[in-house]
Amino acid sequence: MKKALYILFFTVIATNGLAENTKSGDWRKTGSNQEKIDNMVKVLPGASNLMLQMGERYRNLYWAAKQGKWQFAEYQLEEMDDLVNTLMITRPKRATTAAEFLDDGFKKFPAAITNKDWKQFKTAFEHLRQSCMTCHGKNDHAFITLPASPRKGNSPTLD
Ligand code: HEC
Image (cartoon, rainbow, N blue to C red; front, side, top):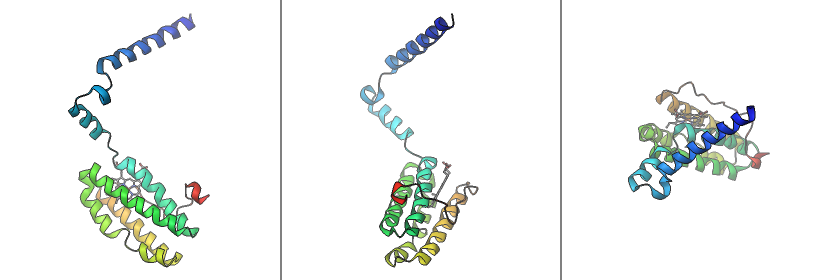
């Protein structure tokens, strides 16, 4: 009896799924251009998405420098810069505060990285941390704080 119920249950799910698919088709292949654009706009990554990556790169940046992997640190900075630029496109309402961040947040790193100087790096990192949190504050997310010394990186390059 139990088994029969399961079979009934899954058949209903499977047929419903099929009906749904046949009805709407695959928008990527058969949708109008408008439908394609609308769907693509809907799935553009927003701040919550991009910021998860930002948080990971923030940790990796710190640990790259701490381990003297300066090129890897520089690479993290480039990717972080890209993330903010992407955010400006995908979420126009964040563009003004993002631009303010880009003007200021990364500015102390070039010297620290060229000199491969941990002390200078720490100052640049603290400046970055404040700039990140300033943007969180301006965007009603002041509760999202960041550690001054992240406990670990997450990249295999830093294992
Ligand atoms: C343009 C403003 C802005 C800048 C610059 C910015 N953030 Fe964010 N961040 C946000 C917003 C807004 C959220 C909340 C996400 C949402 O509401 O969709 C967020 C969320 C986060 C989160 C939480 C992610 C989660 O969902 O768990 C982390 C971590 C984070 N930011 C790290 C950083 C770091 C690190 C920097 C600097 C290197 C930074 N952010 C710079 C606007 C910004």
